Length: 156
Image 1 (cartoon, rainbow, N blue to C red):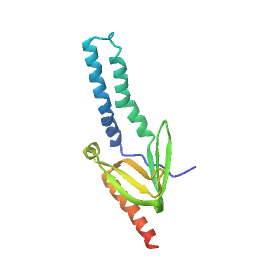
Image 2: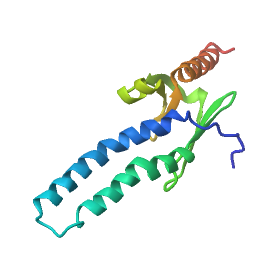
Image 3: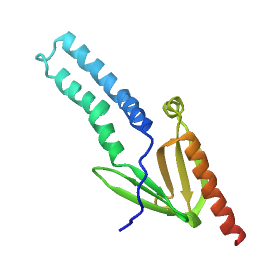
Image 4: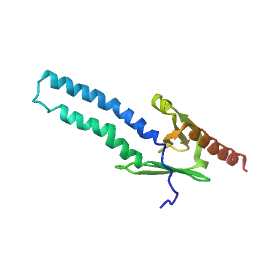
């Protein structure tokens, strides 16, 4: 069992997950409202489940997912933990890293966040993503890992 103390992701990551949940919730609610107005089905048959799913996408799921994510940056590895239903605990030794990306989608850019992606040798789980980092933290983590990789390839 790993004993590394996990670092929580930036709190803005919860907001990002809520915004992403809105991309599901809003169309669902609009469809529910339209079906209610048309009146093809009894009142509440569509809108009540649509509202419950929207609340789940906008509130409960992002909060729960956020609480079950974390990472630990050690001298020679990065540990990424996520999942509340399907738990995943991934350790990436820096010696296996081939290249590193820092990705910023529109929602992440708006909130000042980035996703650090480590691409490793091998085919199974050959890339590990760590979302929810402040952009400056993702950039500095990339440089720390890159410098470690450079030292290993130079034999230092």
